[in-house]
Length: 172
Image (cartoon, rainbow, N blue to C red; front, side):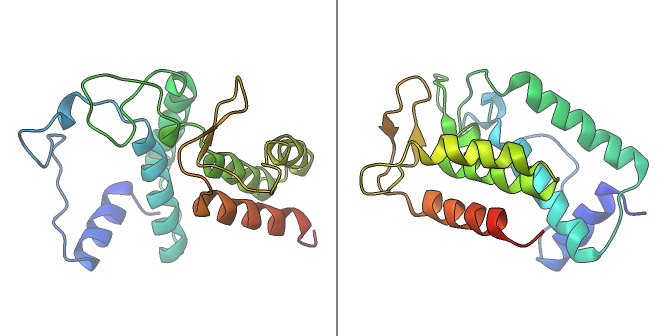
């Protein structure tokens, strides 16, 4: 079994970085310590998944429990306002850390990977209904109005769309 601390230390030493055990901001004079950035939860979970996958390791029960708690925390807070990837004094709703078009197609990936193919197909139908008349997607879509927000066209949105399509059409 591998602990999160071991994965962090191994990853840090492999990239020439020093792992830090302190929760203090790495930079001073910024608003980092006060900013709420929900996207960091996804970053953390992705990093752990990649580290475990590449090390062909299994998490110890305490680390798995911690990740479970973090996942539950995300379910509780994701609708709250945050600073996204920016350190702003105000906290508008930022879809970067919530529900961008790419995060939505990535949900299809997660559903297919966890054998929830019928839910994934339903989400696919819903999402592709938002495409422009040219079949393009923006970076974000306002769920209330369907209006495109952010960059248009957005390459990452289209990459996520193609990946989701490939997963949905892969042989079982």
